[in-house]
Image 1 (tube, rainbow, N blue to C red):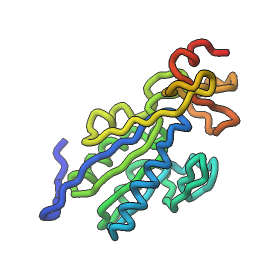
Image 2: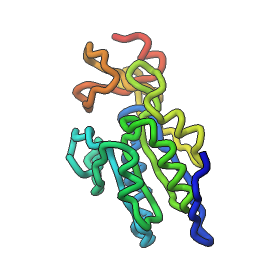
Image 3: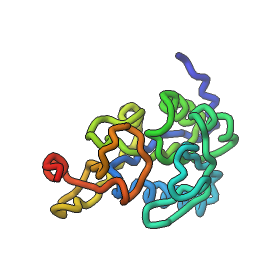
Image 4: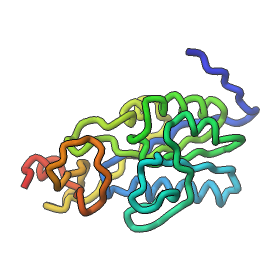
Length: 189
């Protein structure tokens, strides 16, 4: 499908994806980049899935309580409707958004917008999560961050679920998940 670019002269958009396991600093890195864009006097809009109400209904909040105001959206198309005349768009927890998030990010980038997306690349079973793998394939820049394994201290890349719930989406923090390396994840103790 052809998308009308509507580029502004001298402005090029791109897509950045920050991915990793829980407790790896994805949201912290997203907030850092967005705050820097604001310091540079760029017009920034920030979004998160409406279902993510773990720490706050509107703010994006990292596990260490760093926060920035955002607009909750029910679906990714709302981002296109709400992101008017912006230079930077941030999206947290993108794995919870629908299949259109890739197209939405592409459309924004074609309009000259810097798009910064953060999300889990794998679910609690170590399987690709939501549209993050597809976003990685179209991203101009990728940052994979790692947590520290709570069992052995090596780098962790998988979010181990401490409960028996088998649903893919289960909101939680340290009460439900812990970061583990590949080896300790597979020990499942």
